[in-house]
Image 1 (cartoon, rainbow, N blue to C red):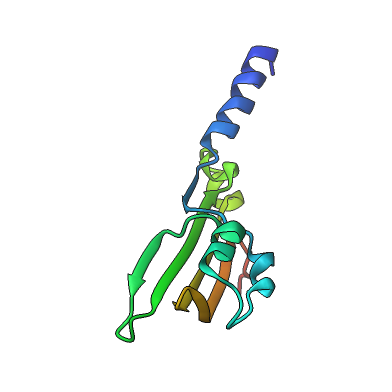
Image 2: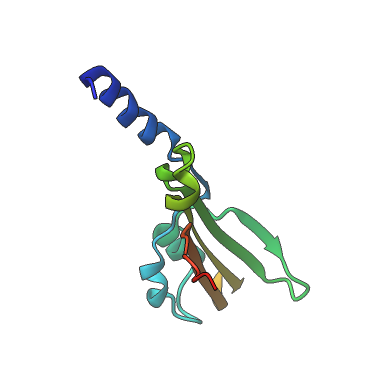
Amino acid sequence: MKKPLRHFFAVFLVLAAGCASVGNNFDESRISEIKKGHTTEADLLKMFGEPENRAMNSDGGLILTWTYAEASVRGESFIPYAGAFMGGARSKNKSLSAVLTNSVVASFTYSGGGTETRNMTQSTPSN
């Protein structure tokens, strides 16, 4: 393969590897620092940045929510013919909600997860 064509193919693979994200990628390792009855709204903002959502519950508590999601497609997925066998995708998501009463954390919930898929083929024996 000639050098310019090789370079073009490499650039194509980098650009074709689709990736998208939504929200603020907060540091979930700091969740263990949240202490009910002690952590304040100001503490949460220092730890996780501005929340994506602010709401009020029926008890008058303030609910702060941080969310993040990302998805990417492996570059091999875009190779003609071979992509169906070599490609795949990856996704990741996480969410943190904290309920504050009098500007102090009364409760909080964290969830996170993700998936990874790979396109693979398997030969089946013929009878």
